[in-house]
Length: 429
Image 1 (tube, rainbow, N blue to C red):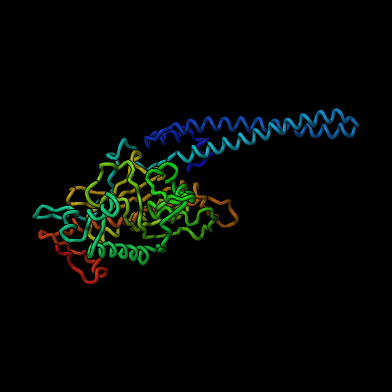
Image 2: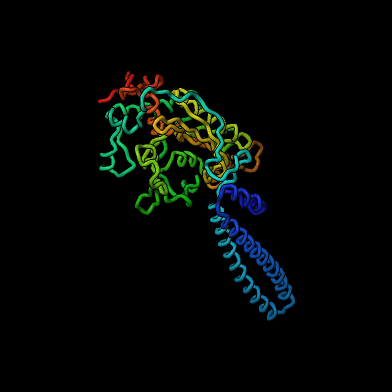
């Protein structure tokens, strides 16, 4: 959430940022009107309080002079003033609540380095790594490969659950588990992240803190009971909220967390997109990287977080590129985002496998995550960052497609062999 005072004092700049994101500015107009009402309410309340205080002093003087009737008349006037002041206080509270609701609907302001754009076509490629594999045969996609290998069953998954679910069997399930363990080992042993295993079900406050609520409720799976609990769309939600409503010591920062979790998304609005295979699922797995950083260091932490995610792709020898998202494509709460896109031979293109974002104080302000510097300084909001390190399912897809052989077998990348129990090649059944 944006800072209330910043929005009030920099309305034109905020409007420009919203327009650059191609966002609706109606809420900003409503905010300005509500702020004017708040100011008017405060001014009237202050004036009436001054009158009440003056009348109270006069009442005391009249009582000393023995003018009881006049004093009683003034008391009646003061009673009327108190009733109006109470009404104004209630109106002010309602107006401030309205202003906070409007603020919660406004997206973050993009960092100055984010490219301005009209669509995702204006995203800017930063770098590429590796080369695309060359085949002397027509490469298959992961669905045909997985079916021939006997490791992917979409029909029975749909029978058991619904469309956009998958079952992985045998070496396919083993490969998924190998990827999870490999990623966690690299991030915890080499990159300095602390592993955590959070709840997979969270409350509304957690989802508000990371800005999934209220705007993106349609994308969530909600449990049907009175507690208003939801399945997590990403480990970002529980891990970022770990220190919600706490004040940390500045010397503790940065915090670096990594977590494996399943993720659950309704995929609202994605009808007709990526319906084949397991690219876009209702349930999938990720290893998530989350950081709390000092404001002055958060963009350095974004670069290192992105490099940490890239390391996994490099160790797996998968061709990828890094893209800076433009203002037209950046997520609701992010100030800057790098997408990592892996090469998929069957599509002859790059597909997103990780988004690494700096949210600055946007999430921390919603979740009230603060820190205090030495010397008893006033608490400040941390900067929060997160990124996939990586999305497991899409990495699984990339391995099948990039390491496929003409006979339909798939070579296991060298770094995964210790996790695969000695399996070197996945052979068709």
